[in-house]
Amino acid sequence: MSTSDIQPKKPQRILSGMRPTGRLHLGHYKGVLVNWLKLQDDHQCFFFAADWHALTTDYANPGIVQQTIWDMLIDWLAVGIDPEKCVIFIQSEVPQHAELHLLFSFITPLPWLERVPTYKDQIEQLREKDLGTYGFLGYPLLQSADILMYRADGVPVGEDQVPHVELTREVARRFNHLYRKPDQPLFPEPESLLMPASKLPGLDGRKMSKSYNNTIELGETWKVTEQKVKTMPTDPARVRREDPGTPEKCAVWDFHKLYSTEDERSEVHAGCKSAGIGCLDCKKVLLKHLEEELQPIRQRRAELATHMDDVRDIVKKGNERARIEAERTMDKVRRTLQMGYRV
Ligand code: TRP
Ligand code: SF4
Image (cartoon, rainbow, N blue to C red; front, side, top):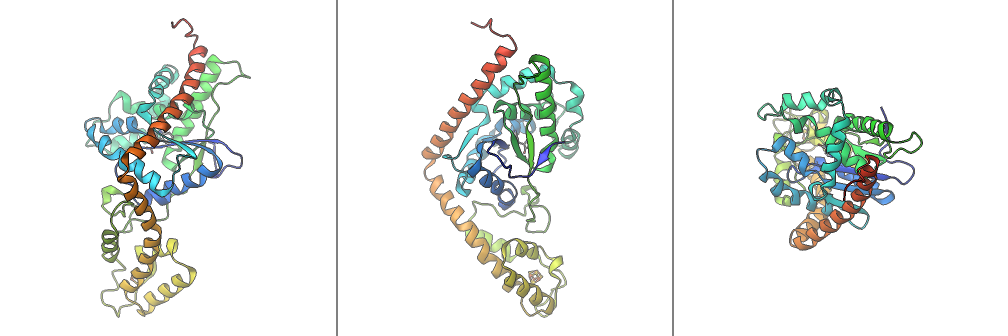
């Protein structure tokens, strides 16, 4: 296995993708986007909306992508993913990904795909969808094509995606071995840059996820966030204001650990245990920090949403830059496969 720290030492080519699944929430921000933000300053980054990937599971509802993709891209820009620093694009706008996926499919043994852990897991978890399809089995290979197309050195991913990068390394090795001289590999073997799991729980203490209905969306209004935080469940022992509580049994405390200063934390902790403060006081401290973090993002978001032409333009330019890079790789791939007979 080859994983390394999220921040590699030398400047590198970085690539990562996200499926358009709807508006992003604080979990996406703290778990993924903050890492992308760190990487974009020192590395050459390619970030893309994986719309074809969304269709591997949502093929029966293709309209979902259209609704969600712009929301997601606006969220990226609103948090500060910067088109001056990185290439932002849409997967299906670079059809070379499909071509490379096809060519890889010829050299990839079926067991390599069947043993990818997400394959059986997802089929189990998404029982309501028929995932016994050719495309769903091949989906990690499409991801390999995404990565190798840009000859990325590093791929920031969560733990569940590490096996996909591992597969990508094997595919790169097999391609190089089959078609290239040992000292002239075409594809470098990418490394996973493992993003630590976000420490931020959802509003109910479980993992923040749209399907649990426990999220704070980046794009919701402050009023909604405030209401959600005020009604967050707390330690059930604190029925009345006078009942002491245990912060460790409360999701609000997990938020404090991430957002509040040391002084605030010790005050809140002691106040909870002695019933010196009420839950609403405790939440107010948190709300102040959330407001500081979220309001600038929301302002930029609202601004971007009223300038959709500019947003489309940014992505259009990103698509063009990605296509140039992709074509450069495909040209080498086609030559390597001796397809010079093409007219
Ligand atoms: N499979 C990834 C996910 O579900 C998204 C993705 C597609 C991706 N292609 C990628 C991530 C390439 C990193 C690199 O989260
Ligand atoms: Fe949770 Fe704060 Fe209430 Fe304690 S005081 S139960 S930490 S909200």
